[in-house]
Amino acid sequence: MALHQPLRDAWTRSGSMLCAGLDPDPARFPAVVHGSVFDFCRAIVDATADLVCAFKPQIAYFSAVAAEADLERLCAYIRSEYPHVLLVLDAKRGDIGSTAEQYAKEAFDRYGAQVVTVNPYMGTDTVEPYLHHPDGAVFVLCRTSNPGSGDFQNLRVDGEPLYLHVARRVATEWNEIGDCGLVVGATYPDELREVREVVGDLPLLVPGVGAQGGDIEAIVDAGATRDGFGMVVNSSRAILYASAGDDFADAARAEAARTRDALRARAPR
Amino acid sequence: MALHQPLRDAWTRSGSMLCAGLDPDPARFPAVVHGSVFDFCRAIVDATADLVCAFKPQIAYFSAVAAEADLERLCAYIRSEYPHVLLVLDAKRGDIGSTAEQYAKEAFDRYGAQVVTVNPYMGTDTVEPYLHHPDGAVFVLCRTSNPGSGDFQNLRVDGEPLYLHVARRVATEWNEIGDCGLVVGATYPDELREVREVVGDLPLLVPGVGAQGGDIEAIVDAGATRDGFGMVVNSSRAILYASAGDDFADAARAEAARTRDALRARAPR
Image (cartoon, rainbow over the protein chains, first blue to last red):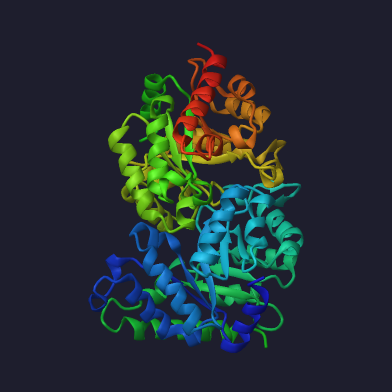
């Protein structure tokens, strides 16, 4: 039960739908952080915390460089220094129940995330362990932002694309078990609008603005709820690598502020 | 290109379709290993290496207890001591291309796995980074072994279940990009037979014998190829926890031998 209320609080407190994605690639770090994954991410977090409703570390970037200890420190830092910003671990887990219990331990106990992204392909029983965890909640992949996302997600089932079947099942059945949201890419605003029509006010994690090119005005029109929120709109690389110089944190802040303002300017209020 | 030839070699050398799954749960370790994830897994590996075609560490069990260093040591140990046994990292990854590149680094560079399990839901471009890696290959989830696997996998698309669409696309398009196999649960032998009919001799990773209860005779009849191989049949908990005492390695060996023999007795030759 770590999504709906904390996210509502984060939206109203920050006035922002922006999520800063933390995808640390040491090859792109400015010299001043001396290759430290934690130092780089902490500088980004400190520079943007008042502009965002959520932080979303992407675990693959930490795993690729054996930086689990940095991720532990980073998550603990975010939870203690910025407790009103939602912490989403982007891991896209999906496995049988006994294994999902281990992944739930990893996300919620080890890293202290409030929400983890999960893949729906394996079915209901593979998502329950996250929802049964006392501190657990999920964003479920629905219509993703990548070019090939339609390969299976768009296949027609009873006259509708598969992703709408996923959306409907999550919004009804799974959200009864525990706090759920959906992942819908910013690069497909028409599909975002369709999903919003099916799921009511369910929170949507919307990656794909910034480096992936999603159109902010189009996604706000398609996905915002009547209170002017409803989405967690993620930008990673455009914020993290706004400057390759020692001014990277200031540049990240400026890019985050620009994106937050663009989201806010378009949102209904 | 790390699947088809190495797996053929592993089958013929071992005469076995058995894969020992390495899902280390410290709560179930015998006292003699003093809680060491590496020591427990190494004992299982040494006790079963001549009886199996593959080892399959399940990364969730390592991640839940912050045992990445044990997994690194274990994978290096398997590759150096038992180079003819295929090393499959069970991680069920699935993410956009730039993130999949990081997961490919994790699986193939950091851990030295030869094959990684991946989830197809996000589409072709999310699997390409694994196949483009010079040492990479994948087993793609198709029809999984868990109770709820049919929730989405059985939805009908053009008169056929979704999992057969996945099987066909992997066997044709994805297998042209690099070495692919499919994951089909032992608990659904009828579906296993359908998949085999669609994919020719494509290797199948078949989890679900042992603790999950898959019927060995039924799956060999449904999934073996004419040479008597064609499958990597995984058992994890039944082998690992065959005994809770200090004789755990001997008990694991006995259980592995029994399962290998049952697979061999039924296979066409």
